[in-house]
Length: 286
Image 1 (cartoon, helix red, strand yellow):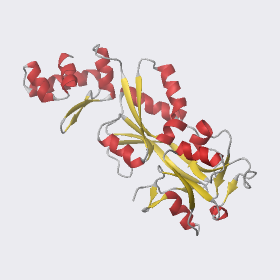
Image 2 (cartoon, one colour):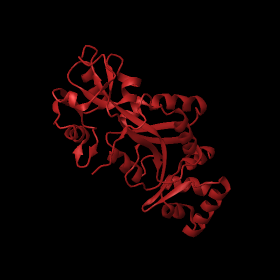
Image 3 (tube, rainbow, N blue to C red):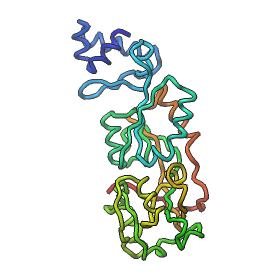
Image 4 (cartoon, rainbow, N blue to C red):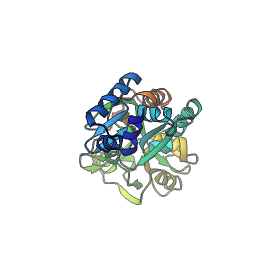
């Protein structure tokens, strides 16, 4: 455990071996023996150093260094719309494990954070080129937001061509599809170019703008229903839109990370009211 804690403190096997006055091979042998004893990897070997795995954080806590931590990365819309309930359940079950949430605007930034080792787990669209473990957790339904006094407010569904004359509230977090922003791509297939009234930085801001009547907004259903949409109407596009979501990591989740993945799969908001064959959005960056 002394060797393990020293590697963590130094963030390097080389520096830890120097500090302990042992060879790197002897140090590596002891760490591997410890990992075999606890039943999983404690350290992730990187080209320039080493970092703790979720199980490693728990082992460090057992050594008295600090409380256990789990680093979660997610898109902003998922963090504000779907994760509060999941985090509350986690805190009720595991109050001693600290959660650190890292929020990102785009799926590309989220994937990059995982590659750089910023987080233990990432929650977002299924990565185009997975570099490790990917576990599907459900789907994200995209809905259209209008105010209560809108001419379409009495309906539940709407086709995109019916919105050809409307202004739109757009968000910088809008994903890219086949080289174009999603709404440009979708409206283009429906035969028109969307007229943008406002660009926002956050999807939650775009929803509030749409609720106030600035323009129509396309947003994930969970952010509207769960966070900022009490005074607006949701319309389901016909055909409906959704994209698969997953939790993914550089390495196989173990310990606290594996428990969090299990919780996500059981607590993820169900996508309801969708037709049997909704349109699966190809939201893969071009």
